[in-house]
Length: 199
Length: 213
Image (cartoon, rainbow over all chains, first blue to last red; front, side, top):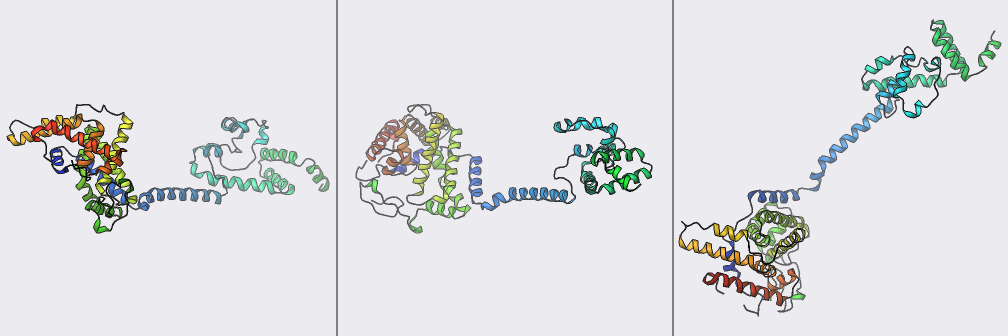
């Protein structure tokens, strides 16, 4: 060894002796490393554009569905059970126990109402039919329901009373009586005053 | 003294104060040029770089970790670090110096994780494999060379780890004494002593088959 320089001995013969027939990485290892090297050169955009575009498509689909639901006047999250809970005029008595079983806890705690007050003629979708109807039809049914509810809430006592009279005139006596009971509870004394003013 | 690959002159014995600058492209060794081309996006440059260094690096790791499966893992980890560092690569020394430093660091990480093997362990897969590679039907010269390799592998495996690392970094990695000292955290004289003892032991094991200085 020569201490004067940084090359204590010649590497070449030692390297030759060590190098021959000492093995090498397998082809699988070679392939993995070369593939990693190529992958690392791919532009970053190419690595994230696919998952990003999928996520964007999904988000767009959700937004479109929400927009359509909002446009039809239905709540954003409509479930089949919500539709099934709508009381129907025909099967009100039969539907009540079944509906009570599916009600959320806080709604079940509400005091029971008389059957006559439970089933106003809100919607012409029998509950058994709505059970069979696919969930996709729910938004349309809710649209009708909301329209009727809105109309009922906004009508004057005179209009409501006229509706009751129309029901009675159409022979739907039971429904007219039920509506009249609701009317009296909401506007106590109005009917008496009206009859006094219009004998 | 010309610092390898740096393209700048430094005073002998002034190893701690090696000034490093990025040399011009034409001054770089071929490997460093390939690495820079790869960092610039040339995948073919990496293929060439890999082909030039794969066998030597694999042997280096194989002789340090002495297990074929672990060698593959460490070898792959080493190249992954090379690939991951391409953007930060600066050719302040020869490429192989940088590469074998990474490889040595990978080996040390492996030892830290798995628990260091006994420094004087004599069972070396390489030596066994080399000895088994010498069939009786081979010509005498080849058989003798095979036996010499087997003895060298066995002697190398029996070296204390510090001496083996220094010897392999010097012979396979092409690192200078100063670079070995820096890489192993030892002084230049210590590194030189380790090399001297390693060579003496290997020559003793090889007898007449030992390379002549």
